[in-house]
Length: 143
Image (cartoon, rainbow, N blue to C red; front, side, top):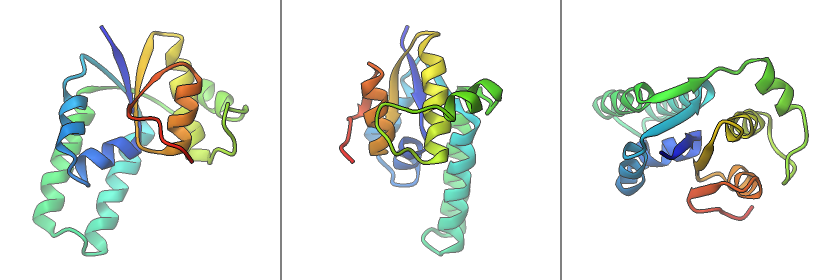
């Protein structure tokens, strides 16, 4: 059984950008892990889109529900002391922004527990996950 990590950029690509293929691939995962940060960033992005009038209120409501449904299917990892300690250390491909470091620390810690796949469209996260020996979907991007 594959364990996959859902990073914020992939969540937003699937939900806000409407990539149905990626959304389907995420939904098909038997074990899906995410940081609590993933859904904080996701919901804030939806609110930004609503407030900037990029999406109407009815679309916001539908996307918020879709995102909440995905969240319910995930095992969530808190931003706890082990994550913060790891986030303070270097990664394979630097520089890494603070929020990305939280995702990468969560990924790195989950790798020891069998994580095999990372969903991310963020080039720095994807490159680092690839350097950790993990499969990256939709694909490892270049910075």
